[in-house]
Amino acid sequence: MKKIVIALFIMLSVFSVGAVNASSNNLIGDSTAGQIIQIKDKQLNELKDYTETYGSETYGFTAYLLNKVRIYSIPLCFVGIAVGAIWQYVIGIRKLDVHDRGLFLIVGFVTVFVICQVLPLVFAIVVKGFRN
Image 1 (cartoon, rainbow, N blue to C red):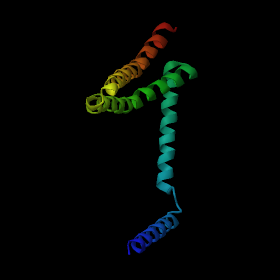
Image 2: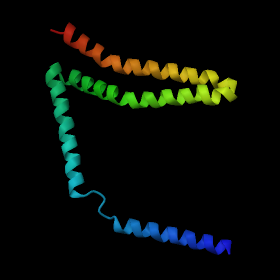
Image 3: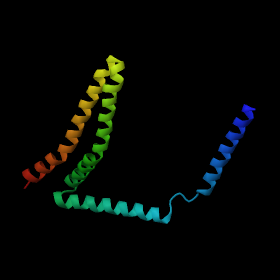
């Protein structure tokens, strides 16, 4: 009896997945495509603003990338710090050999976080301050 119920459940799952895939042929709608184009135009305008601000395409692109790294490093480093805290305080209590690994993760992610936040400022000071 269990085998029959399991077989029916598997067949129902397979057919329902096939029905969902068959009804979703239009993956990107018109409004979604328009939003993607708007996001692309916004990013290109932002890159153009950086190029005009720094007076060079190379410096503008570098400043644009450093700004994106600054923004995306915040959640990544917070997740890394949380994982390090779990390693140190939760897993490290039971296994003393991994206790230090958590501390090293926390220190490493805090260091990366500080570098990613300060590097765009240092770049702006060096490029704007020491160039003509």
